[in-house]
Amino acid sequence: MTPFQHKAVADRFASYLPHVKSKMLALRELVLKTAAETPGAGEVEETLKWGEPAYVTKNKTGSTIRMDWKAKSPNTYALYFNCQTSLVESFRRIFHHDFQFEGNRALVFQLDESLPKDSVALCVTASLTYHVKHNKAAKSAA
Image (cartoon, rainbow, N blue to C red; front, side, top):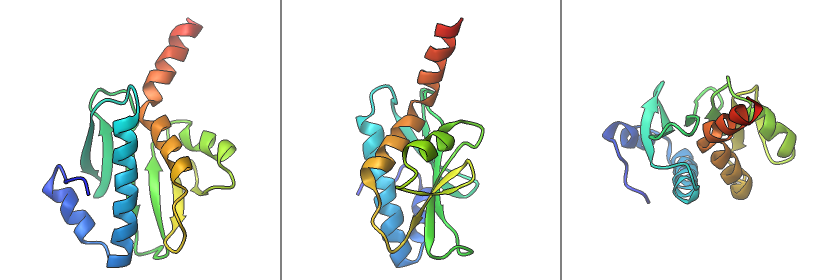
């Protein structure tokens, strides 16, 4: 397991129920591994935003990713994206069979199902390089 960068994040993961914690840690490892393997993403900082584990590119090339499990939906956990981006809309078109979606902000996973790792990794990559791709498109249009 990748060491936590901040005690507050470690404490948040420690607060999850055991069966939830294992799923959340696996999702965390997938995000961190994908970030490390994504050209252009740069270094990712792990922090808390709104009390949820969040992953932010230090070089500002990407859009923040958050994850959490909520007691009000005890059988699911989610990966959240900035709702002001087109990310989830794009994911819905491409991966409509792989995920459940929550509006234009989240991919929702069932605790009793396997994580579709390859599809999630592609979504993480898209988020971590979101501004690189959109800045290039804006420059091309100018």
